[in-house]
Length: 130
Image 1: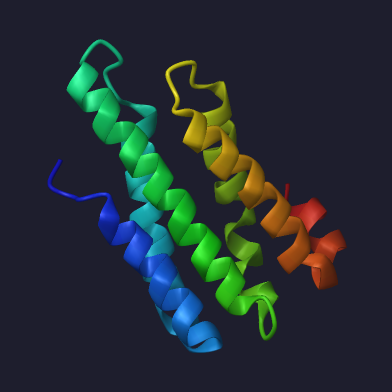
Image 2 (image 1 turned 90 degrees about the vertical axis):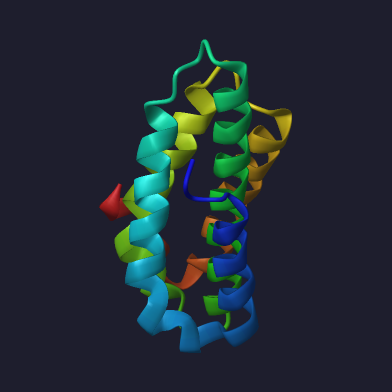
């Protein structure tokens, strides 16, 4: 629990604010989000407090991806294509979790929609990555 969930939301806020200039930070931010999502996948479901932390972490990761995707929407949507597979795996992890927040469900669905909207120019490349 050394990583506080709001830090990931900040990645999204910065990505949204600086747009295409966030490109050089994407590998680092996504690597941290991938690590956090792996922690989410291994959470002990019997510990109520740990489950609360995991759900907050998942929501923050969704907010980060959303902000970053929106930041690239008008300039360089292809920057996120290499990370599409992980993003979809994370969404699948959340959707399979019976203990998820309803907010996690709505955030995952909105992120799927955002992926389709943002990556429209490269939609065929996106589907071949999956």
